[in-house]
Length: 143
Ligand SMILES: [Cu+2]
View 1 (cartoon, rainbow, N blue to C red):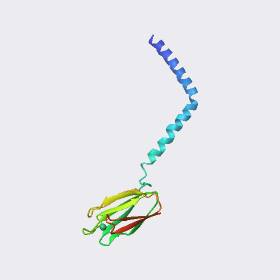
View 2: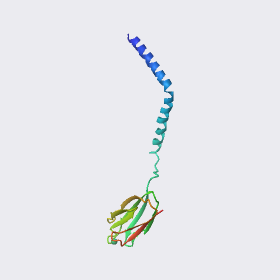
View 3: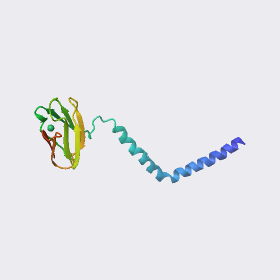
View 4: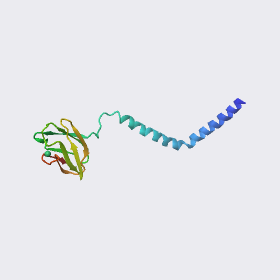
């Protein structure tokens, strides 16, 4: 009884599997491609220590002389990090104001605390920035 049932089951199972394999030959290749190719790059990607998308950093200090350096040159269309750090207590440069691609950006500059501005300059040219009273000034050249 059991043996007979098992025989029938095995026979139909084997037949079905065989037929499925036969018709699925085309699909098998397709499946192998789908499973094989995406598996390789993800294992490589996190392993590489260098990130090409890391933004270039620019340090701009606020000293008694104003913004230092007075000009930085940044690449156009790439993310950059501008780090403003106010190093003098008595200055009117307690804030930086700039207009980038028509958008006004204002940042408070606390004493001795680096303030990071992560941005992408989309238009080539010179971006002017200043303190909130427009007394001390600096420029960013976008190339
Ligand atoms: Cu000022």
